Length: 257
Image (cartoon, rainbow, N blue to C red; front, side, top):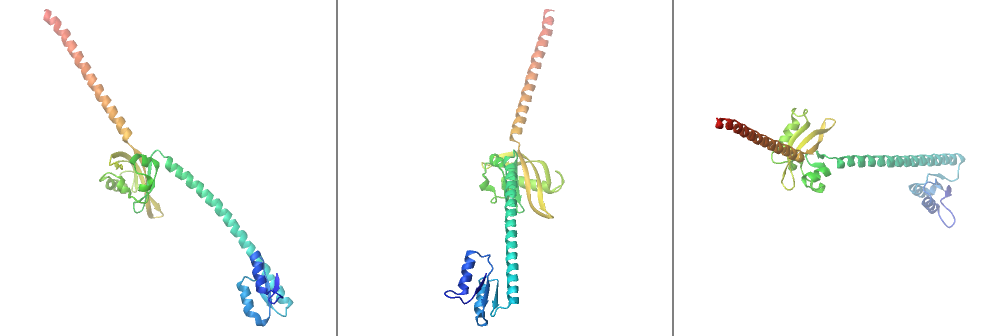
Protein backbone atom coordinates (compact mmCIF):
# COMPACT_ATOMS: atom_id res chain seq x y z
CA UNK A 1 0.00 0.00 0.00
CA UNK A 2 1.15 3.53 -0.74
CA UNK A 3 0.06 6.54 1.31
CA UNK A 4 0.93 10.21 1.37
CA UNK A 5 1.86 11.79 4.69
CA UNK A 6 -0.53 14.66 4.05
CA UNK A 7 -4.15 13.56 3.61
CA UNK A 8 -7.43 15.42 4.18
CA UNK A 9 -8.82 14.76 7.66
CA UNK A 10 -6.12 12.24 8.65
CA UNK A 11 -2.34 12.06 8.25
CA UNK A 12 -0.35 9.25 6.72
CA UNK A 13 1.14 8.22 10.09
CA UNK A 14 -2.34 7.46 11.43
CA UNK A 15 -3.17 5.53 8.23
CA UNK A 16 0.03 3.52 8.72
CA UNK A 17 -0.85 2.72 12.35
CA UNK A 18 -4.35 1.53 11.39
CA UNK A 19 -3.10 -0.62 8.53
CA UNK A 20 -0.48 -2.28 10.74
CA UNK A 21 -2.98 -2.83 13.55
CA UNK A 22 -5.27 -4.71 11.16
CA UNK A 23 -2.54 -6.75 9.48
CA UNK A 24 1.08 -6.32 10.49
CA UNK A 25 2.27 -8.23 7.42
CA UNK A 26 1.04 -5.53 5.00
CA UNK A 27 3.81 -3.48 3.42
CA UNK A 28 3.28 0.28 3.42
CA UNK A 29 5.25 2.82 1.38
CA UNK A 30 5.06 6.40 2.63
CA UNK A 31 5.24 9.38 0.25
CA UNK A 32 6.66 12.55 1.79
CA UNK A 33 8.27 15.89 0.99
CA UNK A 34 11.84 16.90 1.80
CA UNK A 35 10.62 19.08 4.68
CA UNK A 36 8.95 16.08 6.33
CA UNK A 37 11.98 13.81 6.77
CA UNK A 38 11.40 13.57 10.54
CA UNK A 39 7.91 12.25 9.83
CA UNK A 40 9.36 9.78 7.33
CA UNK A 41 11.76 8.45 10.00
CA UNK A 42 8.78 8.10 12.34
CA UNK A 43 7.02 6.09 9.64
CA UNK A 44 9.99 3.72 9.37
CA UNK A 45 9.94 3.31 13.16
CA UNK A 46 6.30 2.23 12.82
CA UNK A 47 7.40 -0.51 10.36
CA UNK A 48 6.79 1.24 7.04
CA UNK A 49 8.73 -0.70 4.41
CA UNK A 50 10.08 2.41 2.66
CA UNK A 51 9.47 6.05 1.86
CA UNK A 52 9.84 8.07 -1.34
CA UNK A 53 9.98 11.81 -1.79
CA UNK A 54 7.92 14.11 -3.96
CA UNK A 55 7.80 14.58 -6.85
CA UNK A 56 7.50 10.82 -7.34
CA UNK A 57 10.04 9.40 -9.75
CA UNK A 58 9.11 6.20 -11.59
CA UNK A 59 12.49 4.60 -10.90
CA UNK A 60 12.31 5.46 -7.18
CA UNK A 61 8.77 4.06 -7.02
CA UNK A 62 9.87 0.85 -8.77
CA UNK A 63 12.77 0.39 -6.33
CA UNK A 64 10.50 1.00 -3.33
CA UNK A 65 7.97 -1.53 -4.66
CA UNK A 66 10.71 -4.13 -5.22
CA UNK A 67 11.98 -3.56 -1.67
CA UNK A 68 8.46 -3.97 -0.29
CA UNK A 69 7.99 -7.14 -2.33
CA UNK A 70 11.26 -8.65 -1.08
CA UNK A 71 10.47 -7.58 2.49
CA UNK A 72 7.04 -9.20 2.30
CA UNK A 73 8.51 -12.40 0.83
CA UNK A 74 11.24 -12.54 3.48
CA UNK A 75 8.69 -12.01 6.25
CA UNK A 76 6.50 -14.82 4.86
CA UNK A 77 9.47 -17.18 4.57
CA UNK A 78 10.48 -16.37 8.12
CA UNK A 79 6.97 -16.99 9.41
CA UNK A 80 6.75 -20.27 7.48
CA UNK A 81 10.11 -21.33 8.90
CA UNK A 82 9.00 -20.37 12.41
CA UNK A 83 5.81 -22.39 11.95
CA UNK A 84 7.85 -25.36 10.74
CA UNK A 85 10.18 -25.07 13.71
CA UNK A 86 7.21 -24.86 16.07
CA UNK A 87 5.63 -27.93 14.45
CA UNK A 88 8.90 -29.87 14.64
CA UNK A 89 9.42 -28.69 18.20
CA UNK A 90 5.96 -29.94 19.17
CA UNK A 91 6.70 -33.30 17.53
CA UNK A 92 10.07 -33.49 19.25
CA UNK A 93 8.64 -32.40 22.59
CA UNK A 94 5.89 -35.01 22.32
CA UNK A 95 8.42 -37.71 21.42
CA UNK A 96 10.64 -36.65 24.33
CA UNK A 97 7.63 -36.73 26.65
CA UNK A 98 6.73 -40.25 25.47
CA UNK A 99 10.32 -41.41 25.93
CA UNK A 100 10.48 -39.84 29.39
CA UNK A 101 7.20 -41.48 30.45
CA UNK A 102 8.38 -44.86 29.16
CA UNK A 103 11.74 -44.61 30.92
CA UNK A 104 10.11 -43.38 34.10
CA UNK A 105 7.66 -46.29 33.96
CA UNK A 106 10.59 -48.72 33.58
CA UNK A 107 12.29 -47.24 36.64
CA UNK A 108 9.17 -47.14 38.78
CA UNK A 109 8.02 -50.65 37.75
CA UNK A 110 11.35 -52.31 38.47
CA UNK A 111 11.25 -55.07 41.09
CA UNK A 112 14.75 -54.05 42.15
CA UNK A 113 15.44 -50.73 43.80
CA UNK A 114 17.04 -48.15 41.51
CA UNK A 115 19.14 -45.47 43.15
CA UNK A 116 20.84 -42.70 41.19
CA UNK A 117 22.92 -39.83 42.52
CA UNK A 118 24.70 -36.84 41.05
CA UNK A 119 28.42 -36.13 41.15
CA UNK A 120 28.07 -34.73 44.67
CA UNK A 121 26.48 -37.94 45.92
CA UNK A 122 22.98 -36.49 46.38
CA UNK A 123 20.12 -38.81 45.41
CA UNK A 124 18.36 -37.85 42.16
CA UNK A 125 16.61 -41.15 41.30
CA UNK A 126 14.74 -43.22 43.87
CA UNK A 127 12.02 -45.62 42.74
CA UNK A 128 8.98 -47.19 44.38
CA UNK A 129 10.79 -50.42 45.22
CA UNK A 130 13.22 -48.43 47.37
CA UNK A 131 10.32 -46.60 49.00
CA UNK A 132 8.86 -49.95 50.04
CA UNK A 133 12.25 -51.34 51.02
CA UNK A 134 13.52 -48.43 53.13
CA UNK A 135 10.35 -46.65 54.23
CA UNK A 136 11.51 -43.22 53.03
CA UNK A 137 9.18 -41.47 50.59
CA UNK A 138 10.61 -40.02 47.40
CA UNK A 139 10.21 -36.39 48.50
CA UNK A 140 12.22 -37.15 51.66
CA UNK A 141 15.17 -38.39 49.64
CA UNK A 142 15.38 -36.97 46.11
CA UNK A 143 17.67 -33.92 45.88
CA UNK A 144 17.76 -33.65 49.69
CA UNK A 145 19.66 -36.69 50.99
CA UNK A 146 23.16 -38.01 50.24
CA UNK A 147 23.08 -41.66 49.21
CA UNK A 148 25.51 -42.52 52.04
CA UNK A 149 22.73 -41.90 54.61
CA UNK A 150 20.83 -44.89 53.23
CA UNK A 151 23.64 -47.27 54.25
CA UNK A 152 24.22 -48.83 57.64
CA UNK A 153 27.23 -47.33 59.53
CA UNK A 154 30.50 -48.06 57.72
CA UNK A 155 28.78 -49.61 54.71
CA UNK A 156 28.83 -46.52 52.45
CA UNK A 157 32.61 -46.30 52.77
CA UNK A 158 32.97 -50.02 52.02
CA UNK A 159 30.67 -49.61 48.99
CA UNK A 160 32.66 -46.64 47.62
CA UNK A 161 35.98 -48.44 48.10
CA UNK A 162 34.66 -51.53 46.29
CA UNK A 163 33.30 -49.38 43.44
CA UNK A 164 36.72 -47.76 42.99
CA UNK A 165 38.53 -51.11 43.06
CA UNK A 166 38.99 -53.81 40.43
CA UNK A 167 37.57 -56.58 42.64
CA UNK A 168 33.86 -56.57 41.73
CA UNK A 169 33.70 -56.18 37.94
CA UNK A 170 36.36 -53.57 37.30
CA UNK A 171 37.06 -49.99 38.29
CA UNK A 172 33.93 -47.82 38.55
CA UNK A 173 31.74 -50.91 38.22
CA UNK A 174 30.30 -53.10 40.93
CA UNK A 175 28.65 -56.46 40.41
CA UNK A 176 26.68 -58.46 43.01
CA UNK A 177 28.15 -56.68 46.01
CA UNK A 178 26.47 -57.43 49.35
CA UNK A 179 25.97 -54.70 51.92
CA UNK A 180 23.49 -53.47 54.52
CA UNK A 181 21.16 -50.52 54.05
CA UNK A 182 19.41 -48.74 56.90
CA UNK A 183 15.65 -48.22 56.85
CA UNK A 184 13.81 -45.18 58.16
CA UNK A 185 13.10 -47.25 61.29
CA UNK A 186 16.85 -47.95 61.59
CA UNK A 187 16.50 -51.62 60.67
CA UNK A 188 19.44 -53.17 58.85
CA UNK A 189 18.41 -54.52 55.47
CA UNK A 190 20.73 -56.97 53.70
CA UNK A 191 20.95 -56.15 49.98
CA UNK A 192 22.87 -57.07 46.86
CA UNK A 193 24.02 -54.17 44.71
CA UNK A 194 25.24 -53.73 41.16
CA UNK A 195 26.45 -50.21 40.38
CA UNK A 196 28.31 -48.15 37.83
CA UNK A 197 29.77 -44.65 37.73
CA UNK A 198 28.22 -42.44 35.01
CA UNK A 199 30.33 -40.31 32.67
CA UNK A 200 29.73 -37.63 30.06
CA UNK A 201 32.84 -37.91 27.95
CA UNK A 202 35.63 -38.10 30.51
CA UNK A 203 33.76 -36.18 33.21
CA UNK A 204 32.15 -38.11 36.06
CA UNK A 205 28.53 -36.98 36.48
CA UNK A 206 27.05 -39.46 38.94
CA UNK A 207 26.32 -43.07 39.81
CA UNK A 208 23.45 -45.50 39.42
CA UNK A 209 22.86 -48.64 41.47
CA UNK A 210 20.44 -51.54 41.19
CA UNK A 211 19.52 -53.00 44.57
CA UNK A 212 18.00 -56.40 45.40
CA UNK A 213 16.43 -56.99 48.82
CA UNK A 214 17.98 -60.12 50.36
CA UNK A 215 15.66 -60.38 53.36
CA UNK A 216 13.43 -63.03 51.77
CA UNK A 217 16.47 -64.97 50.59
CA UNK A 218 17.97 -64.80 54.08
CA UNK A 219 14.66 -65.99 55.54
CA UNK A 220 14.57 -68.93 53.13
CA UNK A 221 18.21 -69.73 53.89
CA UNK A 222 17.45 -69.69 57.62
CA UNK A 223 14.35 -71.81 57.06
CA UNK A 224 16.42 -74.30 55.04
CA UNK A 225 19.12 -74.34 57.74
CA UNK A 226 16.47 -74.94 60.43
CA UNK A 227 14.97 -77.76 58.39
CA UNK A 228 18.41 -79.27 57.83
CA UNK A 229 19.10 -79.08 61.58
CA UNK A 230 15.76 -80.73 62.38
CA UNK A 231 16.42 -83.45 59.82
CA UNK A 232 19.84 -84.02 61.35
CA UNK A 233 18.27 -84.22 64.83
CA UNK A 234 15.64 -86.70 63.58
CA UNK A 235 18.37 -88.74 61.93
CA UNK A 236 20.42 -88.86 65.12
CA UNK A 237 17.35 -89.78 67.17
CA UNK A 238 16.50 -92.57 64.71
CA UNK A 239 20.06 -93.85 64.87
CA UNK A 240 19.85 -93.72 68.66
CA UNK A 241 16.64 -95.74 68.68
CA UNK A 242 18.13 -98.22 66.19
CA UNK A 243 21.26 -98.62 68.30
CA UNK A 244 19.16 -99.18 71.45
CA UNK A 245 17.09 -101.77 69.61
CA UNK A 246 20.20 -103.60 68.40
CA UNK A 247 21.69 -103.58 71.87
CA UNK A 248 18.43 -104.94 73.27
CA UNK A 249 18.35 -107.74 70.69
CA UNK A 250 21.94 -108.65 71.52
CA UNK A 251 21.40 -108.54 75.26
CA UNK A 252 18.38 -110.87 75.27
CA UNK A 253 20.23 -114.01 74.00
CA UNK A 254 23.12 -113.28 76.30
CA UNK A 255 20.80 -113.00 79.29
CA UNK A 256 19.13 -116.35 78.47
CA UNK A 257 22.49 -118.13 78.20
